[in-house]
Length: 476
Image 1 (cartoon, rainbow, N blue to C red):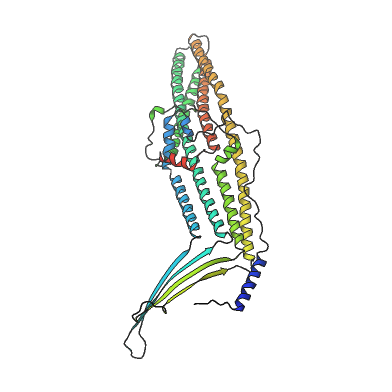
Image 2: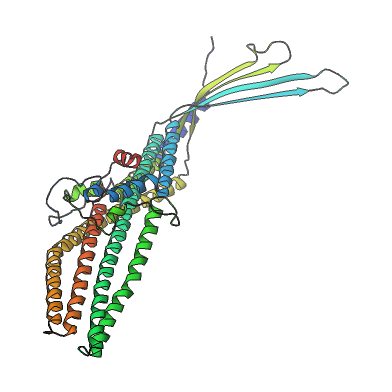
């Protein structure tokens, strides 16, 4: 029977080591914060009617199926989101690596030698060794668990960054589509008015030739017509710019033709669904930038706890099985096989200055993450409040612009009729034409701006996607 005997000096050394560890770890600094600090949102948040969360597929709330198609194409084809996918995969792999730290680590080795002794002996000796070793760190003080928790938070942060990028891709695609249709509509308005102004110019020219109009009338008609013509290339350039942006956002080169439904051309989409906002608290829980900032606090706190655990010793259980192989004809016997097992203790002390400095580093990062979280919350509240206020303001202008356009059309009809009857000069017709063009253009701008501000409001409200919803949208 094998007996294990412990020498008295070993017991004394162990007791002395334990005393040093207890002395060194007596003062463990507390974490600088407990978690994300609550921020008062106040009662004055501008919430539109309806307490439900916004529609996750908010682009379907517009009366334009082509808008839905291009947004979903962008979500599926965007290389930016593919890059975010790889970042998420990286953090998932790092989490698996952290989880493996809690399982035994197995390692094996083998070696072989052939030798010939000196002295004229022609015999060769062959031999070798083989070993199997296992090391398992016991997470007595929680260092490994805290490292795993930090990896989980890092994975969550990567997912929220991907969601934030998806919100941006969807909204920027929708905005580019609105810009395209707005430029097409304004070009159509300009071309129509240019045609009407050309007819007026021809009429004034005829009257001038017959002595019924003066040169001033003719010059004014020419100036107005040419001014309108000068605006048309600007709209065509805006169309080309919007098409290029749409191509890049949907994952294709701008030099390739963009496949769009021509039936929707010149038609600015309108939001026909209600824009629900929910409460400020719900909005903050949806915002991916706020959720990412919160995850970064969690990761920093977990790494801080792992650093504090380094004040304590690491205990590892080691086991080794090894054998010697020779050419004696017996591969293994009781003399050629060895076995060892037992715990090992390692500690950074008694000089723990580096450990305390690392704790200070992690605490500073934690405080920085907490400050970033506070800034993200305040920015989110400001962003949502501004976006909703702008949306409401632009919608309020719509009724007056509609009425102004109706009045401008009637004014132009009357001015032209009175001019043809000789009751008014061509100046009145030109002025009425200018007012009509301005009213039509203002209404087109307003329609596009309402759509843009609705899109920005949806983006400010957080995109309202879960990871599962985003996956479903991108799968089509």
